[in-house]
Image (cartoon, rainbow, N blue to C red; front, side, top):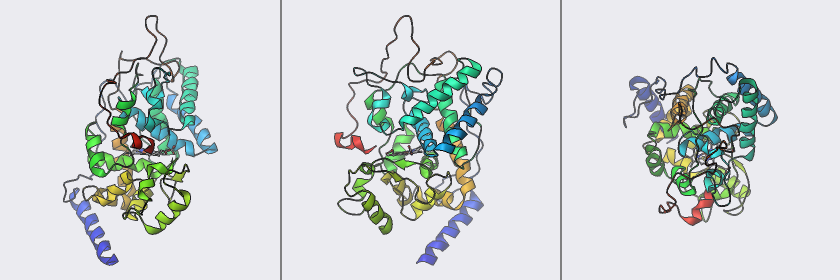
Length: 364
Ligand code: HEM
């Protein structure tokens, strides 16, 4: 049995290498960079803030030397910014009791508080050097890029020139755009398709789970109780039950058991060994549409890096504000005061039907 599945895997490698596609038509060839959105540029701050990238990288090198866990927090922050209302820094905004922010919606409650502080600190350093010309959304994008590189991942240029949004999304819009970890692959494919992200983007971006933690057992408790999810490895299951004596225990566990703090392709090796933490991870290997992609990344880290970079650049340009849209915030947590109206308004319709089951809201 083992040798037959090894043979199947070798045949897949030969097939993919020779033809660049699987039998499902999934292109896994080397790809050029995605198109750069109008208004963004790879040289955006070259003349008015030439040291921007050095300032951000050097500061983050120090931060991560003290605590590498912050890298994962920053990568996830950029993802949560971009998936909801585009990469406009809206996730950074504080709300109020009467007008709760995107930040306070359930999927964002487990974003690391320190990640928000790091972005504000970077913004202050950049402003000291260059004045108020770099947006909080660009700083968040750069921080995510550097989080990947400084944890061992690929280095790459990202288009810059984003402007900061004036509004944040409602709780409902946030829930609608950030799929829960209980999602299967079909739900994830559908969810990402609404953002024009493909199945390949889904598998590549999920590789972000090669670093970081889950801060609660609730996100995967249903895979442990009342019985083992049959797609979960036995030993992995027994160890997770020790970490999570009940399905709602609040305890932390790593997302990639092999190399939890290193940005590499081991996440996909975990999936092939049935050691993915969330349903949304493990089902990528169970589902026949995504399994060949998972396998190709597990056996070829360079291919994963190439695809991850491509999809991150794509994700990082979702619905960006450019030119004279939005603003450059003086404080990433608050919209700039205006003479007319300085309060925040939400963009999505609060009256829309809720898209989630109440009991599931805690699974993020
Ligand atoms: C595809 C759907 C996704 C789902 C359902 C999902 C879900 C989750 C959940 C539930 C956590 C644990 C949060 C906690 O309890 O603290 C998490 C953590 C994380 N996610 Fe995702 N995620 C997805 C996609 C992504 C993407 C696209 C990226 C980045 C490219 C990403 C990067 C991360 C990182 C780095 C962490 C660790 C955060 C930390 O240690 O603070 N995730 N994700």
